[in-house]
Image (cartoon, rainbow, N blue to C red):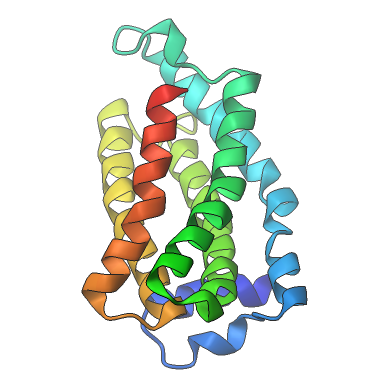
Length: 183
């Protein structure tokens, strides 16, 4: 786990040796899915934080915006199950099947880090360290940085030129947004 997290930060800071942190063998791919369990406490904290934020700011949000258990399960499944399916299609269409394992491993460890970052940002509100406006700005900044992060993961893991990486990274994000709008 520590190596994967270190690899994510090395990748995002454009360090040339970032690949040494990731095992892209079949065993490494399976191990990268350990984040499903390891990030669950942070995800639980994230859901509680979102619901607390909505409850404390009820005038700005409708009651149906809170996360139910079903919403949480769907979100967790989106985080961990949607990407492998969509990414498999993307690499097949692009003729890059040999780079799928690399993209998947780096993406999984990145999701692990992003869940913790989101939980940390939302923890600022109940701790009294940020007001609703600051949380809104922080989450907007997080959303923008997340786009860059997914681009960098696709670019680094698949060794694509910047525009091709942006296209590859955007497809799973667009499909995720479409699913989110339906559920």
